[in-house]
Length: 363
Image (cartoon, rainbow, N blue to C red):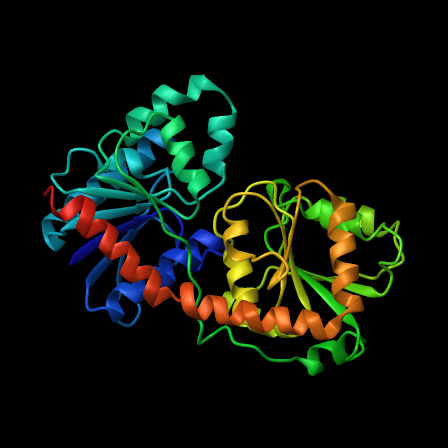
């Protein structure tokens, strides 16, 4: 199959969507499909097996869509794809009327915010999605949100995946030593953008609860909620480690320094950082939102809590700290689960199968 992937996010951008597009297209190539990526992301580069065609586009919506439309027309003429696979709502409108079936992966919880903002959004969303041959999403919640917004075509839930070769179990005593953290200290990692929808201030508030002074919070990421987190941590007895935003290639080092990964989100698809942590052999503590419950088998590889409940996050972290052997067993089950269900090669196979079922038979 010849797949023209058009994306609003791609490396060197950091974040879940950019990582997903990169890994999924690599898996398509490994499965012997032809892939061309189109994007307006500055600094995007081709790599082995995957060609990337980059344009410059203005930020304002009309000029951006005009540039993307011209770009897509040229790529369709030159590459002659069987399908256009779009990631991100921003370029979606420009894919109308190109004579090629369009598949849209509805990645982000930003879409949920649009739905939550009220019915005035629905006619615009329905119009943008009317031409789609297939909608894919990494949570059932996002599929249903698209239907609420007026989408009437086929929709399929396909989880995100993880590179199980890059992300493997391990330890990182050297990192702990550099930060003065003892080998037997219990470290809870929060690896995500520090923005409101990720519930990151709730993670900080959990450390205001009694008995949390023996757990080390490790925060990998940056965003507009960092200052709020720092103010909360200043009222606690712990010394958090803020590592800032890090390249994805370095993330295993941080997971290896931790004992548990925490996902305190208010809204979420299939959490990429959750999958990475699981592949590195960590148990999870996550909220009952979006795709997080698909990652956590309650009591087997982690625990689920209600969103906006810092005390519940704290209780589960203390429980894991008090039973380190059980936490390690849970981490081993996390690794087993990603090997069985969430490798990128298996996710790519499911994606192609969905396209062949819902698109190829109509084209």
